Amino acid sequence: MSSNQVSFLDLIISHVQMEEELVGVFRAALRTAGFIGGKPVQDFENAFAKFCDVSRCVGVSSGTDALRFALMAAGVRPGEGVLTVPNTFIATTEAISQAGAHPEFVDVDEQTYNMDSEALREFLETKCDRDQVTGKPVSRRTARLITALVPVHLYGQTADMDSILSLAEAWNLIVVEDACQAHGAEYFSRNQNRWRRAGSMGKAAAFSFYPGKNLGACGEAGATITNDPNLAQRVRMLRDHGQAEKYYHDMEGYNGRLDAIQAGILRLKLDRLADWNRERREKAETYRDLLGDVDGLVLPFEPSWSRAVYHLYVVRVPDRQKLQQHLNEAGIGTGVHYPIPLHLQKAYRVLGYDKGDFPVTERVAANIVSLPMYPQLSRSQQEFVAQAVKECVGVAQLATADRC
Ligand SMILES: *Cc1c(COP(=O)(O)O)cnc(C)c1O
Image (cartoon, rainbow, N blue to C red; front, side, top):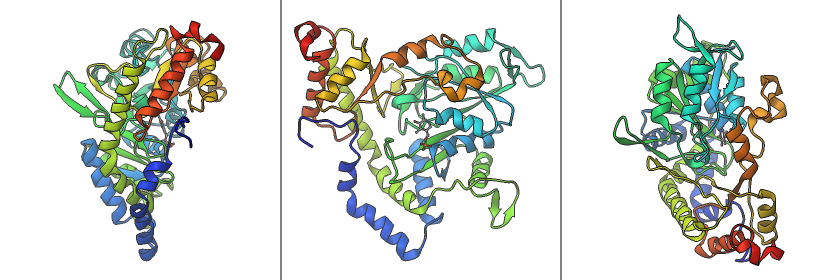
């Protein structure tokens, strides 16, 4: 690739850098035929639990399974409602449905794009009745008992967990964090007066190690983390056909294991994750320096309580299509995460939502663009991206209108 082209994501550089180490993992598996479970999986689980500041980690086959198993193991039952946001990847709600439950949405905050705790409060106080037995909310719209809440730490930044956790406590809701985009992100809890890791604040949390995530496997992988040993044990059973001991099935489970080669690869990469996240934060700062004063361009907002790990670098512009086209012509890759809010997806017509139900999410979805972001992005590549953005957005627009 020439120096004046910038791909949206580069998954090759880091793998070439680590090639010998990574091949070593595969070779060791071949020589022991240790493909499923065993020490590589346990070693990774222990190290990742430590990284996330929790006591238990259970490696599974994907982030979707991690979230499904976490919800099931936390006690969500078929037929119940689970609250989340419409501004997320569909895996969040697929996991809820696959656990037998029904997703229900609250809107996001216009600055952070994550769950708006005021919208959550309003939903609970004005759109629900309190079940007298359990103290949990019953949605008036669906008449379903809502038992759990899934905040999503989207783009690498945590949701505002203090307010979410206190509302969850007041309404007796289980909180399972979707941390699939937030490996190592931190949240400053004003209640506890300390920084907390993404995934360590709820009853359990789900991580994805899809290759493009901040910590990615060379294939599919995920993990559920928790401080609850019983919950962890239930996830262990769910991922492995409901057995704790071979061929003694206490319940039906799934084939949702993490394989040993992926675990070995993840263990090696985990040692570099803190550096990679730091580099992502530096790139975010560089973008802010280069693009901070462009009229009409909204950069990511990082509240004082957040240390984001910039899984994605999402900006807002009045005319997204025009910017994407201009950057594409300049050889710069972009993405949109996500163009159609979940409540407006065909798959979720059955949920009965309409256009206008979640105005912030809908507004945001129409304007967002994700710019190139990865640890190895160079200063000159970022300058090239910034120059191209400026040609298309804001004050420079008039002078160079013909170029855009
Ligand atoms: C990636 C992702 C998932 C699902 O992870 P998979 O490993 O692809 O199953 C879930 N939620 C969010 C927010 C994600 O970004």
